[in-house]
Image (cartoon, rainbow, N blue to C red; front, side, top):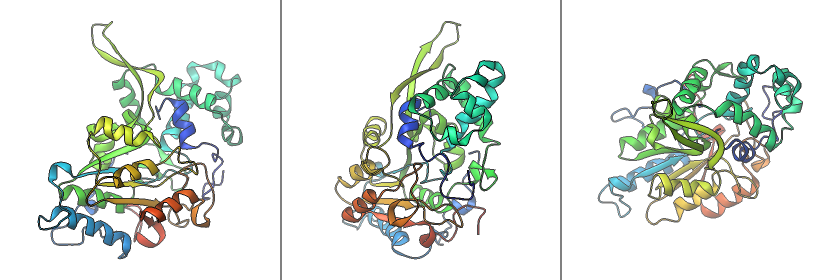
Length: 359
């Protein structure tokens, strides 16, 4: 795999594939920095270049929070939803949680010597990128079944926390928690400062993201809606626990996102932020934005386009960018965005900086 390229050897690992087979058991230990806080009387979005995208955010907040505005929204109804992977932090060369699963295989290998001769574990342990790029849904199911289930929810959260403290993304050799997008942190903080509740609505694992969401994004665990696996109440030891089973419960991806919003939030968002959508719209954020726009009054729908190879990555295949199976921004999604007047955020043109540490 060429770490510096927007293409990766995991191009066949689509979000839908990993989620559906992993029972959605499908990341940082970083608090929102002062850069992400609104300075009194200053620019609430200092990492954004002036332009239509930044103006849209400012106008939306003004329209929904000024009582004299015909688009005013009562505070109880101010809800904004954000996808995570590719919208709030880097998702290349492979989704962070998938990297977590692969790392777990290596850590657990000493207890399973048979894995050295058995795929898909054999390929993971050998670091065979070519073989891993061809993993089937059944292969991923086996990996997730042993790395995400068979333990209590508390035990799983502890494992995630231990991993995220040291896990680094390959290209930048930095913690995944360093690869959150500063402009999006500012938007979340700006919305909260104006009475909005911010929710993460992710195709990734709900319990996985809840382990660090408050430290990283300022989003409490109860405001994380994600994919989940079956959990069962167990009091056989005299101490009640919730045990994680290798069975899917809910897939919060594509058309599942509006369902999850209704199930866990109970209100339609006023604003929604995403970054991906497959050509057939079976995965990604399309339906979340459609559901948001279908409500009355002021609405804000935005999509992050990764078009900055130098500072992050560039991939589509929309807008002539390289194709990829990780975080696909399809031509169909771009057409949908244009038709519905959704705002496409260009990383290259709209953001002064991408990461908190990057100038």
